[in-house]
Length: 176
Image (cartoon, rainbow, N blue to C red; front, side):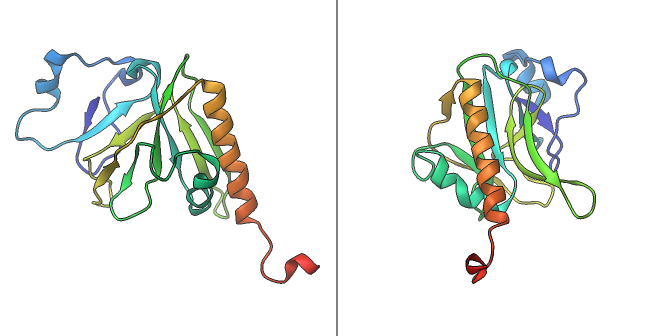
């Protein structure tokens, strides 16, 4: 875990991808009485922890049909008052590099569908505050624990199904 300024999603600490915080450093990094956001370095540095980041409404709509236990069993987190946009994962083997599934947007920028966050990424954790001043909240449960190949396949299936949903023809189009 690393500190980030309130309302920021990343720890800007040199060498963070390989940084392992010791117990002795906790008080220095998180001084008593000083509010900070908490970010996790994902992947092998954190013992294989990561997350599925569901970045669009379609991914949030299809995930419950793809990931067993999504509704009641899995540890999720995200913006207070909204459907949780992150599912905790634990890699049973070596974590891969973070995988991003996106399509080009109308404005020329990436339109993110889902990310499998692993090596080379950070994740904002509860009880931090997002840049829009929304609280990050935790929904208790257990992480999805699987091999990297399986977790990548889950992310791929969410991305593909979300794109089908996004482009599904409207009412009456099936007759054409």
